[in-house]
Image: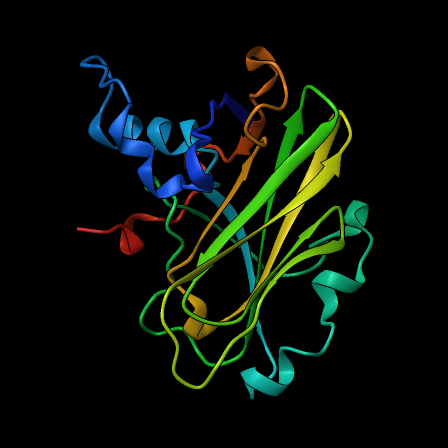
Length: 210
C-alpha cells in the first residue's frame, strides 16, 4: 500500500532551502513528521527508491545510459534490487560505505493542474534529472566541486509523473524539488502529491542526520 501527502510550495527565488522560515509547527506531531511536512511545503522530494551503483568509473560511466533510464517507466525498477529511503529534511545522503559508481533514485508525484513547473536540484557534483523518462535538467560534475543549484521550467500535464535522479557518489548530499513558477497556477492547484513509502519499507534510520 502506498501513502500520499499534500504538499504546498515556497516560490520565492526558486529557493527550497528557505522552507523552514514560514512553516507552522504543529505540537501534535513528532519533530520528524513536522520536518517532513515542512520539506513538502517547499516541494522537496523526501522519499526515494535507490538503485545502484552501476559501473566503476563514475565520471566516464555517468555518460552511459544504465538500466533504470533505458526501461519504460511502467517497468522501471522491475527485477532490480532497490532500497527505499526517506530524508525528512529533503537532503538525500548516501551511507559512508557507498561504493564508487553511478546511482539512480526514483520518486513519483501527482499534479492536479497542467502547466509550467520548475524542476530544481542542488548538488556538489554531477546529477541529471528525468521527468517521465525525459532528461530535463543536468548539473555537470568536476574533479573538485561545491554545492550548486540549477533549475529548468518543464511543461507537465495533469496526472502522475515519475522523477528519476541519476548521480555520482560525490553528488550527495543533494536536494530535488518541483515548484510552480511565480505568478503561475492558482494557489489551490499549486499542490503536487508525492508518493511516500509505508514506514515498514523505509530504511532511513542509519542515514538520518543528527
